Length: 483
Image (cartoon, rainbow, N blue to C red; front, top):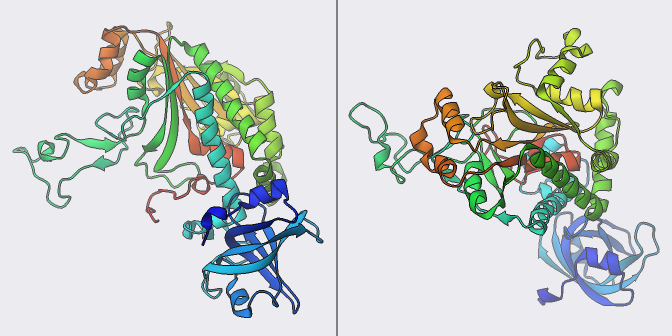
């Protein structure tokens, strides 16, 4: 078969090797024929652009051409010639075609027409063959590569933190249990509780919601680390912003304070967006056009002011606005949507937990720039955030983006043992369960900070897709663990 001689379509388009004999392999997107010739649009996933193959029925047998229907996988050897039609500079004159895998046109669900995103989620095992999802996952790859490149080039070390854990980093309690005990009839203790001593780990275990706590341990030895791995929330939420399984990027840095943390997060976000702009131009142009068509279906007052690529450049080229939670509350309390009771959650007093509608108002209406919110009330934030001198707030930060709301959450961590244990007691977090975490405050503690970026939210922002289920290959949501 000589698979090693295959040339990718992207390389052919980049180099246009006129006169050379090459072998292409890919999937048929469309085929149109007349008496004299068949035109096959071939795609192999290396680029959004299909490559035109010209097949002469005097050269390629009729029964072979009949099998080259939409969805079929074929191997074509032929000569690259200048294209007479518009759209691309060259095309392939086929000498031989081998059908590697047929696709019955009566049954293949991805026919050359516009399919809804909802329908494509039902066939997520095939949806990457469409232009939209091919573009999304090439951009996702580029963003993931940019994450690793950014941290590697700055001397950070990549740490793999546990997926199975006995701690709840967020204190949310919405976790997936991991057990080998029989579900229907688990062993019980004398007082009737499940006897986890007989379980695999001899204690209750869960899928992780965050690698942060373990990441802090590594930062206390290696100075600057990052994690990039799957995290899980058993939250029964069916919104366009929530997944049960998603990926988190969590850097932790020794010798960083709250301002250092904000500076790094802003620089990091700009870097990976710029990387996508420079390396995914073709896919982003396609996604920008798709996003604009979607915007055009909305009422005029709900349409975004900037197109996708303009929005990405806007984030990269502008300094993020930085303000405290207290300042934000004053702005929101006095805003027209709040006064006219248009917010679903009205802002009445200091201490309110901000919702997505409030975050987006600050970014999209008030400042019209990305926003870094700092110094939140301690009562609405996690136990590990460093307490400010006012006794009411913590050195937290959230970064808010247009169309998304919160995209990054982080803080300077509480390095003072007495303050940390006091906060844990207030929040009823047992010290004995986190003895190892407290040891980092007992032995060689230092000021340190970190943040978390939900990777799918970043992919959502960069691709202009409107549902987070469309930026992860196989979404896990309530009632859905297909594929």
